[in-house]
Every structure is written in structure tokens, then in C-alpha cells.
Image (cartoon, rainbow, N blue to C red):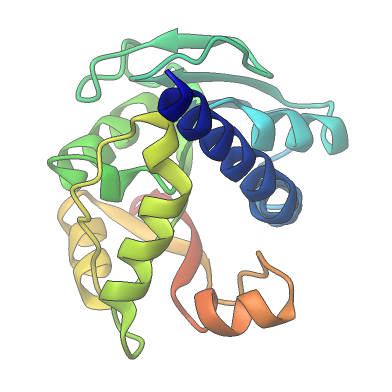
Length: 212
């Protein structure tokens, strides 16, 4: 029992430190970057929304939006309404929302292209995507470390399905999506942490149907 108590204290301390130093500041920075790319008055579905903190911060700056989420693991406390789903099929009809968001979600799936296709089906206007790139030096071990540190405490699946820039563009083309906006200047962390875990490993893209 003393050993379990000690382990619990260490786990809780880790969660508290990670939340205050990394997770919460990252959510604020990411919300600021994502929010400006969402069309005015849009209905938004965040697929794999976690606790919805990023979404709540977007809504605070963009009250013109309506935003809800779905996730495989619905947490006890969420900042937005969250519905459970199976991780494969989005439980909405075609064209049900204006924008579908995937924020660091697709690399957690067994088949990123299949879930991206579901987003394409459900979104009327487009897909807002934040994910990773394997192009920079030592990207794979760095991304695996980041993923483990941020998600193991929540029981999130970690298949580590990261893609290169070319692989992402190939997937977009197969699904009839074009890149309306793309940036690899994603400011998520303080300077020293960014030097280690930024450096071109992240991108944000707004994808729209090719016919649009």
C-alpha cells in the first residue's frame, strides 16, 4: 500500500507539472492559431477533442462559432459537449457541420486516411488539421517521446502513425482535398522547449474540397 500511495503521488505530481508547464500553455497558443482560420459563424466538430480545453479557448475568442466534440475516451470533466464514438465512423450524416477539426488525432488512429475521409464526408466547407511531420532531423524519436509524455496518462492509443509532408499531400489528393492554408510556423512552447520539440515538427492546414 505505501508503494501504491507513492506511485499515485508521483503520477499526480507529473500530471500537475505537465498540465501547468506544457499542456495548458500549448492549448492557449494552439487555440489562437486555429481560431483565426475558422470561417465566421461556422459549426465545428472537433474529432478526438480530449477534454475540450482548446475548443473552449477558441469559443472564448470566437463566440460566433458553435462547437462540439467526439472522442473515443470521454473524460469525466470536459469543457465542451462531448459524444462518444468508435474511432472509425463519425456519427453524423454527410455535410452535417461546416468544419471538422483534427487536432493531433490522426496519428493516433489505425488508418489516418479512413478517418480523414470521414471528416471529408461530414464537413461542408473544410477540415482544419493540426498534426506532425517526419521530415525534420530525428523527428521519429522526438515525436514518440512527445506523444508518450502527453498521452500515456490518459490511456490514449499510441500507434505512432506519423507522416512526411509528401505523404500528407498524397492523402489529401486521394480524398479530393486541396490545401487552402498551410503553416509550419506553429508556436506551441516556450523558447527552450520549442527548440527541442518545435523545429518544423508541427503543421496546421485548412483543407477544402478541390471543387471549392
